[in-house]
Image 1 (tube, rainbow, N blue to C red):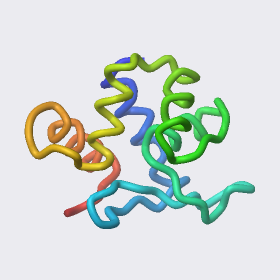
Image 2 (spheres, helix red, strand yellow):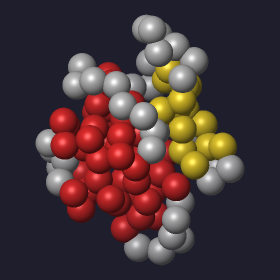
Image 3 (cartoon, rainbow, N blue to C red):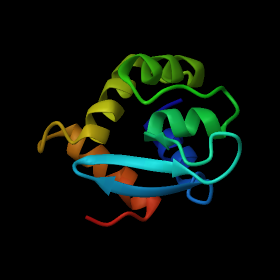
Image 4 (cartoon, helix red, strand yellow):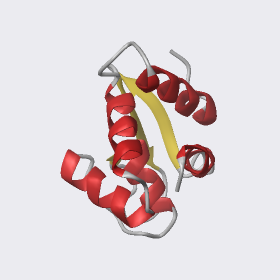
Length: 107
């Protein structure tokens, strides 16, 4: 899965999650299923919505979800850092903007 495919898969999760920015983190709360009310980050949310399993929103869970999705380690690292808003420059910020635009989240 490349970056464009990931963004498109993330855009399909809008109905299943309530997305918002809490602090600097981009998070979504599940609206359906047995995980209703739990918080997910974009990488684990896409993994859950595609039927590849449910993983925690920690680094270990994110890396496992990335492997299950077939995402490269570079893209997985970029998504993790974009979710945390760890940098205001470069690819992280561009990817964060694309994710927020696909999810319809402001600020």
